[in-house]
Length: 259
Ligand code: BTN
Image 1 (tube, rainbow, N blue to C red):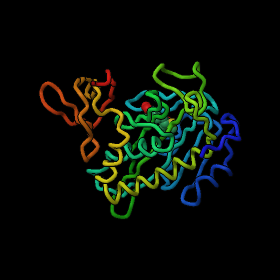
Image 2: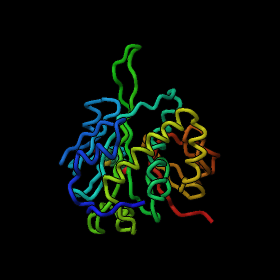
Image 3: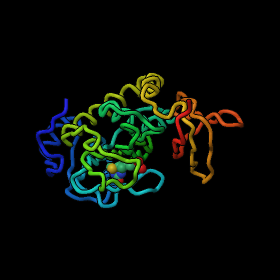
């Protein structure tokens, strides 16, 4: 399952990455880049995957930064066409988190942080962009994925993060890249043909269920309650003192697991 005969810190190689990705993707490799999401958003070629051995200004969700040391993480952005109506677009970030969680044997903190042994090992930033098409503007998704592969404890930016290697699951970054790209394509396909089928699968790895949570909402307010589930459109359902609220965007803090 895990190919680990190559040190994760060995520089990535474009030929190996392209071979691992297969003919459906066109891989671009940068030894160093500010942000693969920024580069992918600038090119906007469907099927393009921008990989960086080192990101110097990685973008996180909700305007945060994403910091990884050179050669220790897998950081890339894929330009995909989810082929779904607007109402299902909020599922795209969930698909990416779910695909990674399956591969590393982890779970998902809503909407798409991948957890392993309760530590965050992967963050995902999906940006919706538009290209000109014959019938008007067409939306594409830039799916940015950052996986902590080989960081040591003192290289982690926050105490609740970890790396696959630290948790006892060493990966070769190119092998992991191949598996994640494949999983992303498969699960985007499931979501396109049956969004609710995808959500049913997502619920199976949904770590937030039953937890007491605090949700920091984009307007600056917060919501507290118990995570009750995820609805068919991927919204987090929070049971509050005032009733159940469906949250479409926000940052979830797991306060403690409910008994
Ligand atoms: C988060 O958890 O806040 C999301 C982090 C997303 C990081 C990835 S790394 C590859 C891609 N390029 C970026 O600039 N960000 C994403």
